[in-house]
Image 1 (tube, one colour):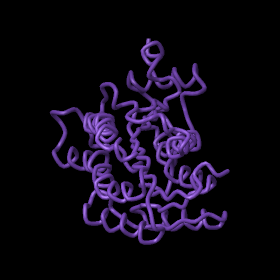
Image 2 (cartoon, one colour):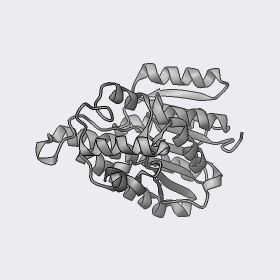
Image 3 (cartoon, helix red, strand yellow):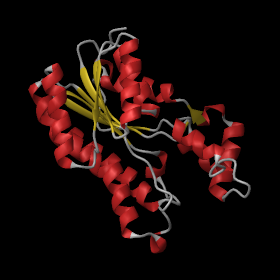
Amino acid sequence: MDRMKGKVAFLTGAGAGIAKATAKAFVREGAKVALFELDRKAGEAAEKEIRAEGGEAIFIEIDVTQDAAVKCAVDTVVATYGRLDVIMNCAGGSLQEDKPVHQMDLDTWHKTIALNLLHPFLCCRHAIPHMIKAGGGSIINFGSHLGTKGSEKPAYAAAKGGIMSFTQTLAAQYVEYNIRANAIAPAIVRTERSIKRWENKEWLFADNPSPAARARIAMQKLYPFSVGEPEHIAAIAVFLGSDESRMLTGITIPADGGRSSYLKVAAD
């Protein structure tokens, strides 16, 4: 279990969900991790869990949309562990106020873009110089299946679509420094956040589901791979963070259980 032995990584949004599962997976493969998280209680709990399992981790409370805070956090990681090899920009999410364009207020647009697109830019901006000093590394960004097509949430879809282009640009600009950049675009993952949405009947189990929700319901019944667990995405991230993926850069992996292939069929 040493696929990431000797590597140092930081992960944003690491107090829960995909990033927390990935942090644990990184540690099991020999990495040391820094947990970037705005929720102090969740971040401290995640750090405690990893340390209880014998892993090396530090929690850093941070708003990843703030440039000075990101720089300070990245510098803290390097000061603590001496290097930086892998970064995973996972924090993100959509807002309920993300409505059709003519109904959306500017604050919703700016908040969504800041969390989902500005934050990866800031983390890369401050992390890449350290990765260059380390002789290379791996950047893992998080898109979404909604970034590849239209969505009822235009701000979120625009931000996630931007992630794919941003990732390709990073790959091209930093290949000479042995830095790879790839993205993962999940669909439905059974995180704490998505479970809460299901329980509140805001999505798959709505009394009067939208056409998009009906497609998701049909897909869940027809295709057992359409709903993933955080650990499934973490396994992909370990591959991208390790040297096993040395031939991959500039790609987005559609970790959607085939959704991008058969969504139209399921909707019909």
